[in-house]
Length: 140
Image (cartoon, rainbow, N blue to C red; front, side, top):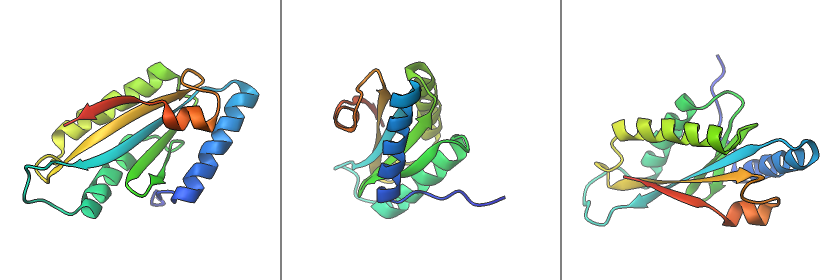
């Protein structure tokens, strides 16, 4: 079985734009989940940020479908495109990932994971709307 790759920031944005165009053309729903690791101030010890992102990436790879796209949305942000997912389906994926994160040790390593969900067309019809309008879900 081929190892799943994480898209670069440029590739991820290109795929997100393609998914948006497909959504506009064929009225397909999709969701965008974003993941940020935030440092917890009172934690002195822990892994480095890069290792925590690798751990988070591995968790996401294990929880996502083959058709979902995982990549870097920004320098310190991972994103997941869930093609054909309406807000309810995106919420189920988010909930499943949150349940998995409860078992991982990010807090013990000095970080918490923030998850945002944005859905097309509910939250917007263009890249500006989708990248700005987010419903925050803080998991710690």
